[in-house]
Amino acid sequence: MCTPITGFIAALILLIYSISVGAHTPPNEARVFFVGLQDGAIVTSPFKVIFGIDRFGITPAGTKSKIRHTAVHHHLLVDIKQLPDLDEPIPRDGKHIHYDLGETETVLELVPGRHTLQLLLGDETHEPHDPPLLSERITVTAQ
View 1: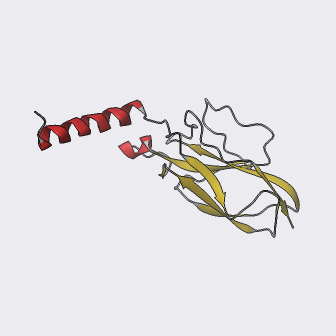
View 2 (view 1 turned 90 degrees about the vertical axis):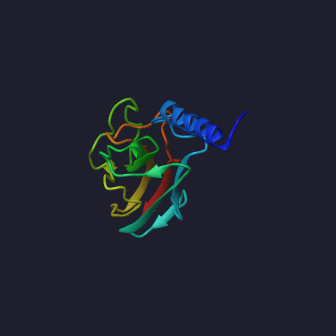
View 3 (view 1 turned 90 degrees about the horizontal axis):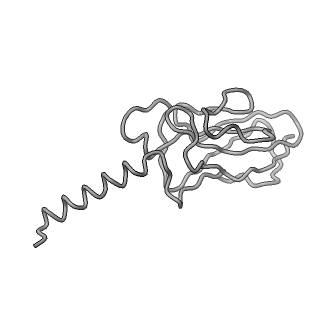
């Protein structure tokens, strides 16, 4: 016979198991996107870029607590031709911008012309999740 306490314990065990099995694996419905910035936009530099995320959390890089299994931090890829190696930490340079403190927006300054922007989320050691959480790559024209 299932009592409320045994039902609670069974649900708790199932939750713990599902978290450990899915550690560092975002749910299928998780997504990352730009808020209010569309492909083909014409922007006046510097301009504000807001990062959106659904069905997954944000936490600073280096987080050691269990939340690191269900949260990430943003990386903005600017004008990259090819994604970085998704089995390695995301590079840190002018084209791979890290938001280590868990920032969800930035003010971006771009030279005039066409640029591509894409978000790639990384775990506590800056490695992409499996599967990676990527936004669509968009093109903006900076004035």
